[in-house]
Image (tube, rainbow, N blue to C red; front, side, top):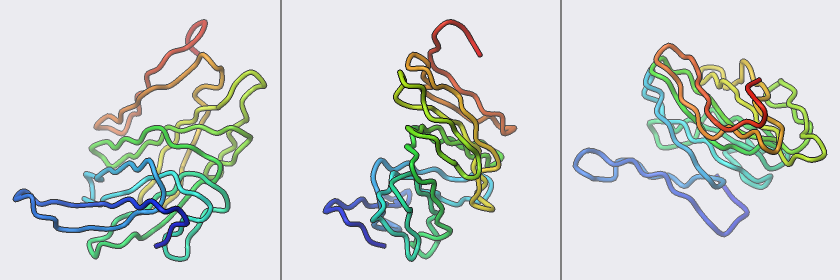
Length: 173
C-alpha cells in the first residue's frame, strides 16, 4: 500500500469494549465504509489518485477505488473506475451495494458508457450496482446531467431495490 500524497488515512475497527481490534492505512481520500450484512465483509470505497496503490493495483487516472478489508487487516480484491467521483454508497440487507457518483467526460464505468455532460453542465451523475462477489458493476446508468438536476442521497431496500432522491428541473424523467 502506498500513496504519493503526504496525507494518510487510517481504518480502525473497535470492539464493544472500545479496544482497537484492527488498524490499517488506506489509500486515497473521501473514504466510505460499509459492512455487507450478507457476509460481514467490510468494503472501503475512496477517491484514489493515479499514484495511489493497493498492492500491485493502481488506477490509470484518478477515480474511485474499492477494496475489501480482510480479517488479516489487508486490502484485497481491489477494483477501480478511472475518471469517476464517488458521492454516496449504500448497502441493503441482501448485500446489494449501490454507488452514486459523477463523471465530467464520456466515461466507461465498469463496462457501461456514461455520457459527458452537455456544454452547460459540469457533471453527469450515475447510479451503479456493485457486485462484491465479482468486483464488477452489473449495471450503471445516467441519473442526471442537467446542472439543475442533482441526486443528493440514496438507500437500498431489504429486497435490493435502490431509492434515489434529489432535485430536478421541469419534472420527473
